[in-house]
Image 1: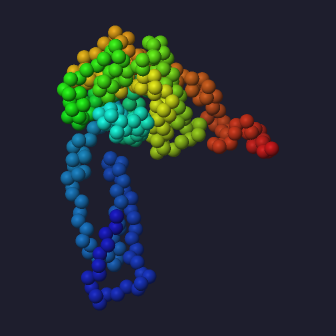
Image 2: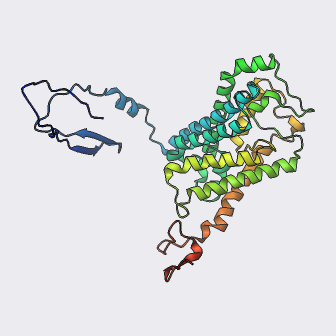
Image 3: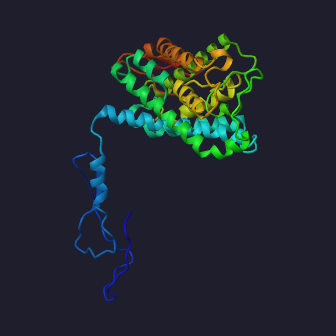
Length: 347
């Protein structure tokens, strides 16, 4: 931002249409970052601007991580932390206020915005998987080095654990107030109580097979849409809009498939917060439904994610023209395009 200053020499006048010319020079430091500064001009005058502190660049250099894998791990941790923090907090606000300050639809928005912000934070560094199922599917498709899978997953589970712990800490007073200090779960009445803030639980009508199918289908849809959103040979969505489109995908899945079991779709989002709820005192967090539930939001999403990626490849991605072949312009129906003659006449 340019600093504006007053003329300190009353005898020196400028024509109303005369402006001091300034030239912007761009140069790069050894880290590749861009700095902009005005060049000196013949009629330059002193300014009251204060030179920026030299401490900030030095501090950045001191804490800078050079190892690419470690940077990706840090990004996955922070992105997953943001995702689960928004999501679990939206559930907490709804449950602890008896839906006075939130409902099922606001919870869907909480998770959607959490995904948007998480992808926005980590996307440029690691690709923002934020989900062990996504990481496994990308590795199976050859889009992520196998050696990175363990580290990505570890970061995601730890990020989700830290987020759930943060929600528990922030809402601990409200939880104690709402529960009268007794953290109960009623398996026979199919009421997980406030443990539902942290992990998903099945609806009364849902069978084991139904829950597994729900998670497989929901995660398959998520990965199929993510592949389409990030495929630069398809509709060419700008990178800056990818977080929004992925977030809206989560919102769509939530409002369409959330009734059965809360659309976990993400093992880290479910397992780590479930562990927090067990540590906090909800003793049936894992033994719910005779241990027939907790594993479903872990196994189902991994299967669904792999299916989603390979279905997109089989039906869409594998059929793009090879590099160098003529591509159909975006927005033009492919049925109306003839490679030899160009565009068919519209009827």
